[in-house]
Length: 507
Ligand SMILES: O=C(O)CCC(=O)C(=O)O
Image (cartoon, rainbow, N blue to C red; front, side):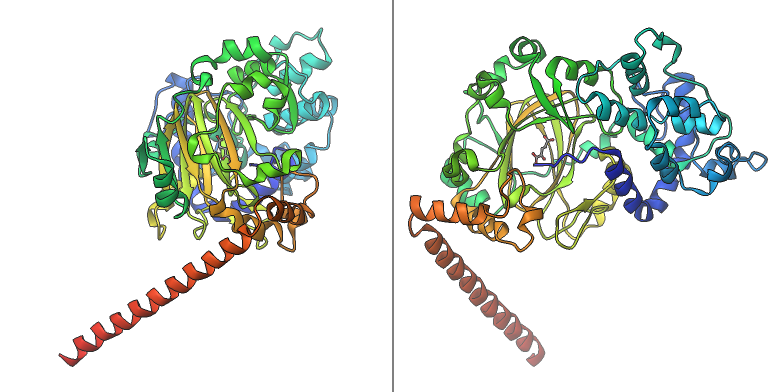
């Protein structure tokens, strides 16, 4: 499952790593979009195919993309004049430095100049302060800054912190503009159009194994959740009644469900906090009994480890715009993801094709990708038309389940408030892959979802040997035979091709 990498530092690092790759595309978007801001401020209309959310945050403080400075030759960038000697730092570095300050100092510094005002009001700084200091015990009230202030100065009339704040003239910054733009954009219709996943309804388990699991191919299964009570019961009211005061994992903190919904109702941000909880069924057993593993995924060999298995099931809740940026699922497992409410856009790339804009480290332990999902769509979705293989795409709706084969890169964005269950599993079809993964030399960094990362291989292998004696050897033999078969086939194919070629020449 996606590991929580919500802290500002890693966001900044990711954005920094990405900057070089994105520069060209970003500039084009930004200059075009400046008109849009003005348009939005005037009439909230849409322009040039981009449309802004009607409730888009107005915390941009008048920040404009840097390219606009060229269109305004008589103005100077008030970003620089107001920063003094700090103007030589990049925007990311200025924010890094400000990230060391507490709320009081950040507030005081914001009064020094217009430039400091803009930087010190950057919402992610306040989000970090709230999450670091209050953990999940906060009541979101429309902006992170006012949430922070009202928690520490309850007597202060936060309505004075007008959500739009001051508008600063002639402040140009690509970084800050992009952050605002990504929080404010609606998904473009053309990002949702492509639907090329294979859809199946009512297939047998054997068909699923033969045509999808064995071939490691995604499929969207319709009508396989018909017996799920969750489909009928799970909506906001029911969940709040059942477990409104239960704490669930949300990014780096734990939040009461009720507080999370209050946040997700009001938050329009680049990377909305996402509720992703691996212990939901232990915390609220009724939730665990409201669904059943679909028939296709019943075999799960990790289950023989009992409580020692890595995390494997999650309830996922998030508003429109929340989601999971590109990643491969942990421990080389496969997964299924069932939508109970709402809908999700999926983009999947096969294991041998790294998605554009995504840069895994050589050992696969780290992935650098755009800060937000919408940023990926803005800057890289277009490039997928030039990939040697087009990605698999779909919108998965309530009542549908997607099969995510092991090793596939995937990105998911919720198109409306969504509730889903996902499970990762190991069947005989990917047992050898999982064992290979667990035994990698850097298992201590790669293996996830368990405290005992290094010993998981030995534990899992020996438990399989005891419970299913001979299975591993048998699977290894079959895999060897399959490989040999494929080699033979490709040899004969090449000979045949050569002959055809030869004939061609001899004619
Ligand atoms: O956000 C989602 O629903 C997708 C979750 C996901 O990609 C995963 O669990 O690996």
